[in-house]
Image (cartoon, rainbow over all chains, first blue to last red; front, side, top):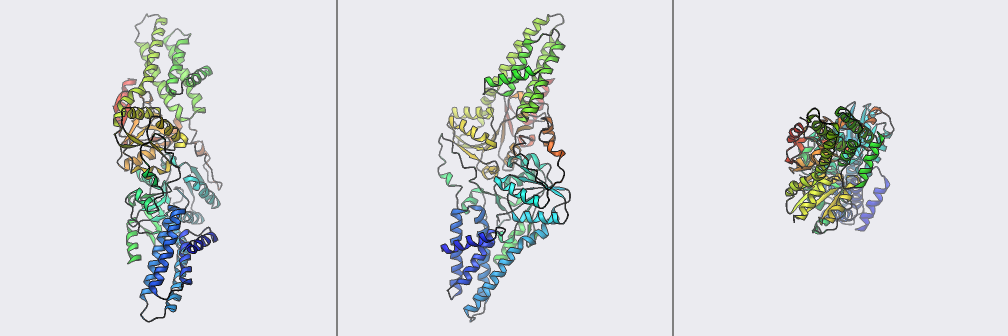
Length: 315
Length: 315
């Protein structure tokens, strides 16, 4: 199954603007197209095997930030394909089924590609004229919302957190859109929150209960925004809806391969300072109570609506 | 008055373990000792002039972190000296008054030196056996509380935030005390808070309403701790009680010389990203509602008791 991983990496390299989830779906459509099996069960197994190989590889090499969205998209895709396949009447030739599935798979991938545009078409209206927005971490969805708001003539400033280097990338992009920015340290979110009108965040994944998995530092930012009564919006494509349901931060890292928490095992008292590599925690989990609204390609949702949409996806 | 600044810098250099406020008081005692004036009014003016020169110099060169405690200590000291001087009966020779003032000034300075020990003697009992403490920024008072708790046989772990390089200094000190530490990024305070039992913070200054001026990142940490129902303790010598009463973060930086907010003037929309030097904000202000208790040399106080103590100091 290493060819799946290679195919994924190749697709990913072809278009840097495309999200990892889209690359994963294109890879699975490739698996559909190339399959030698002649039964629907065989096909389903093959897709599941490919997704598992991809997940395993990402779990080891990429950490949460790639794993979570890829995992969510693969789950939704396999569920979608299996449902179409089992809906065919008995007696239809497998080759015919396969042709339809490949077509539908491509449509699915195209829909994913367009989902960022679609969520931005809802989200940009929430960027008020004359307001100050705070963002954290690199999110193409958030950038598209802001780009569109600027293109529609809204004037606003953006306070960008450093976020381990992501901040300067975001500030560069915003500068191209003509949006004034202020780059601030992660620790300064409290200091600057009083000037902020709106917080807009991206997502690595949305959880079953409407919570948010995103760049580490998202949780403190959302809590600080709530304490200051500032709205927190999340821009997330619906393929990021996942069936993860972490109750603690620790469960989150276990879901993503548990890389962070290997440390726990060795956390026996010792006088030497365990100088944790500062970047080892890449994501945190924000409970839905800290999120005001979500901009998705399905429309603007409250966090609790995510579960409803997930039920529709998987019913 | 540049000799005052030079004297301060020299005193400060003599003992790195001594806080800047103590160095400022020793400098003012030096002014007392060297005065050529022969009236109490003249002496008071001279002290005020010296304190103002010191403040001016620090405002320009050192930023909030030195300015706030030095300013608070000078205010309290001058108030103390003036009160003693005006309590003398009419007719006492000025030389005699001066001798007493120098003596009392030295006692005052010694009391300051001991105040850290004294607050630690109250504070260490709040470090529970088997608990996990989170700290932020370099504070000698917090280190003394933790050192004493460890010396008393309490076993605990400390999660130390990076805090712009202060974290590794703190972790080194704690290692010398035999305390296991975990150094984490500032953005990871949300991720790690679920494992924390107690947050202990230092202070650059306490405000008139019982709020806290401290290393930037203190406010988000205190808000996140509150959202998780974790107690937030502040270790602060009473000479850090100040008559500042900031209502916003911006007022805070204005009090400290407004260095941060020069930017505001030029915050006209421009397409070039204003890449704020990330370290330009050094302190933030935390409202008293986020503070559980304060360890001071006057005892363990609630934030609201700070105003009472200030009234006593200045009445």
